[in-house]
Amino acid sequence: MLKIDAHQHFWKYTADMSSWITDDMAMLRRDFMPQDLELLLNQFHFDGCIAVQVNQTADENLFQLNNAAHNEFVKGVVGWVDLRAADLSAQLALLSQHKKLKGFRHILQGEEDRGLMLQADFSRGLSQLKEYGFTYDILIHADQLKHIPELLKRHPDQAFVLDHIAKPDIKNNDLEKWGADVKALAGFENLYCKVSGMVTEAKWRDWKQVDFVPYLDIVFDTFGTSKVMFGSDWPVCLTAAEYSEVHGIMDTYISKLTRKEQSLFWGENAIKFYNLN
Image (cartoon, rainbow, N blue to C red; front, side, top):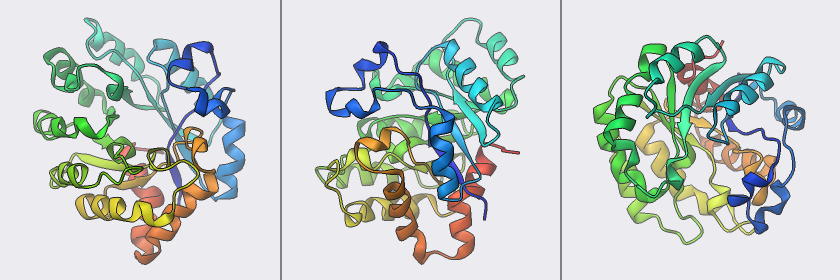
């Protein structure tokens, strides 16, 4: 069984990151690099990982691609590109030369315009990704889920994956609205879902396995076992749980699945979605 951690991050800490790494996340105010993660991946028998962008700059792509070039276990990179740029086509042509660059992400969750993904210039940019085989990671909060059906209808040939199950408010057990909006995504063949980022939406260091079960039930019922993938969200997860605990939540939950279904979740779906070698 091949195992891929489909969502984690590397960074060299700078003061510019303090806007989102708040005082209660002080443990993240340091560098997190491939050698830090490699030990954990080996411990839990992962064959590789997907490094996901942190900063929205062109230099971010070079930083993450350099990490991938020097670490074989980094199988792919989700970078950033300004989808609204006038020269986007030229940028994509150049970026497509990097075989480990698999797709892009924009931090939509932090945008004042909650429906930015539907704006004409953003949509035009998205429509160009499929020409180069690039995927797109959707990073949103739960309040933005209502826009996703329209996004998927506009771009039926674009491969999308929903990050962090769209960040439901697990801490306050806000299941009903999020659940209805997730269920509305059933049937879109071009959408996968990363089962990641849950512990940071729960009560930090005071969560229980049962807190996640109703959310996981909805995700697995909606997407099926062929379109869900594991992501640790390391090192951000460390604010709420150790890597072993994040892994354990899902190891326990999917123990009821067949061996084939478990294999899909732990690696095969990510390999297919990101077209990993």
